[in-house]
Amino acid sequence: MLWPGPGWALFCLAVLIPAVVLVVRSVQLGGSAGVSFWPSVRQWTLLGRTAWLAACGVLACLVLSLPAAYVVGRLGRTSRGPLIGALLLAPLLLPPMVYAFGWQRTGLSLLQGRPGCVWVWASWCWPIPALLMGSGWARGGRASYAAALLDASPPGAFIRVVVPLLARQAAVAGLILLVLFLGEYSVPHACGLTVLATELLGWAANSDRPADVLLPALPLAATALVGLVVLHRVWRRAAWEESAADGLPGPPVGTGRLVALMLLVDAGTVALPIGLLTAEAGSWSAMAGALRTYGGELAASLAVSAATGLLAVGMGLSLVGGRGLRGLALVAAVLWGVLPGALVGEAILTAYQRFPILYDHWPLLVIGYLARFAWIGIGVAWLAAVSLDRGMAEQARTDGAGEGAILRRLALVPQAPLLLCGVATVAALSLADLAVASLVQVPSVGLVSLKLIESFHRFEDGMLVSLSLWLVAAAAPAALLAWVALRARRGGIG
Image (cartoon, rainbow, N blue to C red):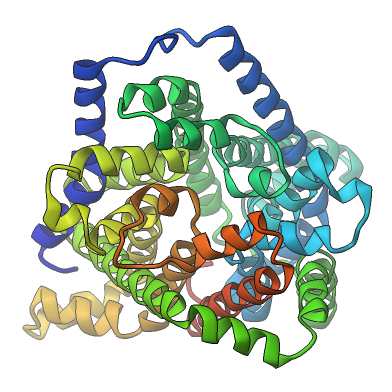
């Protein structure tokens, strides 16, 4: 939608250059003693332990998502229920370590250590399988089910068609979650666990050789790549199924009951841990005290995160408008985004440590966050682009309007709430990021996420609770904008 030059420049700064330099420097410098292309026994053990924990998290997440999947399936499109769509996005916006701190306030042994880590992951990510399984049934499932009814009874059609369909969607969701949990750092750290992601951050902080981080992370990178390939194949198949179901009427929607069910799911997974933190804070004075102590860090973090959000969406608009290699850019950005934060941070440091103008100042933070969350900006820009009414666009061209004017008036302006939601989402996730921030922090900018983890290590419970609630408040605008964007898209694409 914009001139592609700035978008490709940002993409090269945040993704391409760090990736190339990381590999080149790893080859040039080699690894420390005991680090090789083939992982050691200890690394295999750590990877197995991490994979087992992540698999348990995936299973818990799938089970917890079933009520919400039913809601999505009945609704058909999230734009038909903007409040439900916002409630689905809200859990993903909150920092996962804040969930951990909230659930730990219960004092239950089942919510500590490994079980606590599994439950926190499930509380955080259940909307992902809910959206995939619910959408699979509401769209592709209707057409397949209707066809199966021609030569089978309803129970037989359900067993033959719906169950395999949901199993496929659940498997895809499980693969996405597995990739995400394998590289997730903050929740295991908050639960006092040693997993591969926590070890990678330690290796990155204590070694001057990029290979010490890259080589142990290769199994995670391979898993992420396989996940993207499978997701692409399923996406293409799902697109065909949705086109086949376009002529079918949507499922009946009882909005009141669906909203009540979603409120119940959100209350059990989001409101409860946040409510426990709020109750412990006691009053506004505690949060005001945190603001007086770390107001500068909070303001600086918000400024850097907001800049990242604007650049991420701007880069997406530029890349989408440039066509050509935009698909490759999206795939590379998604792959870079799901890799462990320690690997991303190490790549940023390796690429720019010889450039003081970046290395010692806040732009390094923006580049690091952009590497982590650029895929969201590209995805939001793509949604804005495909929302363009082709009939109106052709009429505008006939009337002599230029392509730039068409895109601005028919796509950018109507989709402004969606684009602002993308900015706020990237900003909220950047504000709470811990792994990348730990490596690319600069002396001139204090980061609130690092102050939060410092409070955790120092057992400063009052400050920890207050800073956690400030991060929750920072995520609220993105959820509100999601509701506004879905209301604006009512009757459009889901």
